Length: 239
Length: 193
Image 1 (spheres, chains in turn brown, green):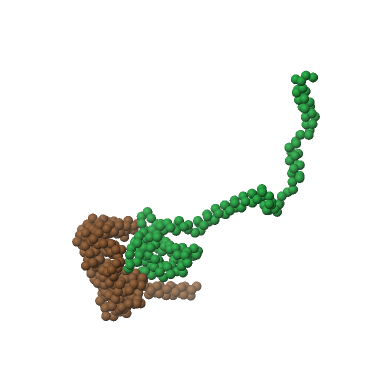
Image 2 (cartoon, rainbow over the protein chains, first blue to last red):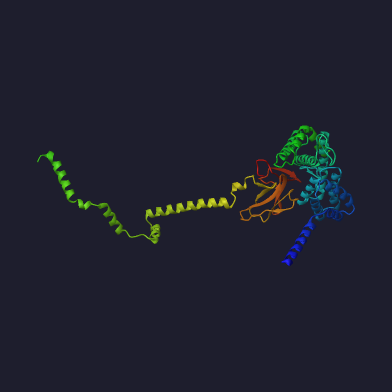
């Protein structure tokens, strides 16, 4: 009986250590960066570490992206370009998870890396990660200009300031809606259509049983942001 | 005898005759029935089938009636069991397809693909890695139930390596990399999914 207990305990310990060792760590991500781009690994890792700390990126999904990039056919410069674009977004205090997601989707669709990174300026228009980063930045700036802010962790909240998660969600969802609109062939000059798309998206997300966007946040954006503001945001990627 | 009395005389004569022969009709019905029963042979199971196969018109009507009733019974039973064992076509096309437990929703993905060798779903909920669908009863309807938290999800089916981004059950569609993605909102108030 005692021998059986000892064997069971050893088995439990081994299986636990196996499970723990299977969880990806930041070190795993760093090793993957080094394997992919030895020259830029430190620079990229610095930005991604910030993203992990802020909760803007998950270690597991990042490692998945880098592993996929390593095994993907394409130029080394484009592989680095994708990681540098995401790193740049993180350094610019932008929600970069949506860029990781788009890069994953592009590779799953066997899209060439150059197109994933830079898009296509024809019809239909395909937005690359660089243009999507632009949209994130322009959307964030527009919310700032309308007095909608995020509160850095540990600082005192001010009027109309949202938590980082709530603010990031707004920026991501609005920018993604604008990108969808452009990729479906919509004209940036049709501001009321842009506004309607954004309104629909935020309202749908706010009406879920567990809201992804807080109803108050959606209302705040829809009260303050105008169709003209959204047209200005989208026109930035056409310049 | 006058003619007027003739009817009365005849009537009395008949009554007299009946009274005299009354024993003949005493328990007549019972005796007739007993006689008939005594002449009719008992019918066994084989006789039943013989009658069923008899080429008489009455027998043919009996056969048809029996077959009809049996068919109706089995048809009703079949429909009842089919509805319980497999989802009906209507159920497959009903967009409310999620049940909620502990904040997670069991979301059903359905793709009709008769003759396909493999069907999977890829989306932003699984890192755009294939989650296989199954067609266990071989009817060409491929399904997978995936546990998802509330949210907005973009996805597409992959049928024998070919992407299919227009799920008829989706809440909407977007363009991505020049192709369609289906969109589904999971956790909608008043809806399953």
